[in-house]
Image 1: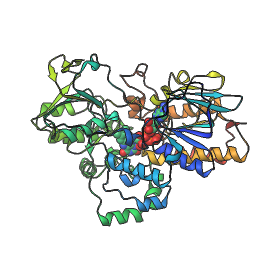
Image 2 (image 1 turned 90 degrees about the vertical axis):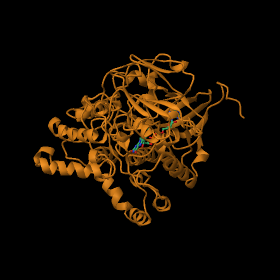
Image 3 (image 1 turned 135 degrees about the horizontal axis):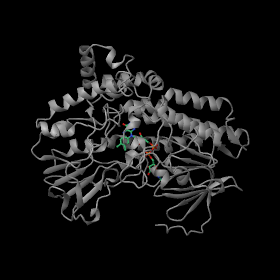
Image 4 (image 1 turned 120 degrees about the vertical axis):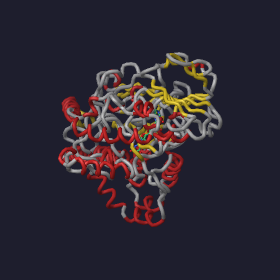
Length: 541
Ligand SMILES: Cc1cc2nc3c(=O)[nH]c(=O)nc-3n(C[C@H](O)[C@H](O)[C@H](O)COP(=O)(O)OP(=O)(O)OC[C@H]3O[C@@H](n4cnc5c(N)ncnc54)[C@H](O)[C@@H]3O)c2cc1C
């Protein structure tokens, strides 16, 4: 094995360096190659896939319809690849990522086991000097971050965590080998989208399952199913229309809101509509609901009440049902977990729900978990405690821009960006799926952003430009715009990763506007306009 490079080793030179080999980084590499650039992707993991490489926990799967999630850029790929389920599980999605990497021969320009720790802009050469954990260096004119909105896991700040003598796993750092749950006493801490998927998957397999819940989330049925041959054919034939539809919808999903307000219809009609949505696949109940459920409190109360009734009907013990019904936020104002018999898990004799707002966890002990009310013994503790979202992966790299400016300091009170793609003071750095971009059905946004960045780099090449920078005015105006869009949204009045809150991360206790909450078509229109005007809004040199 090669020894770690000494700190003084000469930097390897590239035209463009991409950090991260998830869907964003892989596609960016493909486009950079088309431009004929010498490009390198630096990836901390040992293989491609990003989210789908790291999140191997039991039950990990899409909430986006598989066929609406895959890349759309290659017709050949679309026709070759067959999704087996409407919502594919993680192993299949990881196979897909590997298939793409092989098909387009991406791996030869991806360097694995390469965690970037610092990136420093050097004005004389108008390039970035990039440092890896092992001390090796790279130099590149352009730096493109593809480090993931949900890729830095966080563990809860509970005393005694390291003293536990059983096995413990964070869901996003799941081992590559299977974990044997048979007969085991298992704890799951966390009931977000990941916790829900894990709990419903392992409940029948474990000896005993204890779920530690702080904030219940509103969940709705996924209604997954296999894709039969006839449907497969229809999907393949209908790709152009489906992707065209994704381009038109608010968040790039195949679902689009109903133009009616929730209170504009009769009670009977509203109930029937909710029943229909509850019985259909996927995010329709969230993204295809009445147009005002996420902005109007009264409208939101009608769907919250409907789903609360469903929870009460599905959970036998009404005391448990009440604990599973969220009280501090309305339906859909946090990321909606989709579930498969999640609520029925709590009807099992081997499952217990512990509400840690009533009986807080005091510490992790060598044997298990102690709450204010009881001592629990476990063989396995699963932390489904999520991510330091959106800005977390940026905070872990020492980005220094022109004049030594530190990105983490600049974003202390919340991110400031130009189109979510660039930052003033950080020339030649472009961000994919960073703060202030449209996320939604994320690969659709990835393809757009990668194409935009590629267009900008092509423009620089064609015009002999070596320095591209957002202006302070451009950043101020976009940041104000993003904040204004967030005003009035019920989701921005709720603590969640989407508002930058993470009680397990120091300095992330104040709400910020971390993501763009306007429509994806409006986002693209604005970015297209900038490109069409010859990027005049940037400082070009
Ligand atoms: C469990 C789960 C389920 C999801 N389901 C959906 C879904 O159904 N629909 C949807 O639209 N989105 C979903 N998402 C969001 C998902 O993150 C995106 O869809 C998409 O995969 C993001 O791709 P990316 O390449 O931008 O980031 P990622 O896939 O997160 O990849 C980022 C990569 O950057 C690497 N990296 C980070 N920092 C460094 C560093 N300093 N040095 C080197 N490498 C680094 C990471 O190792 C990682 O491989 C889900 C996320 C999770 C966690």
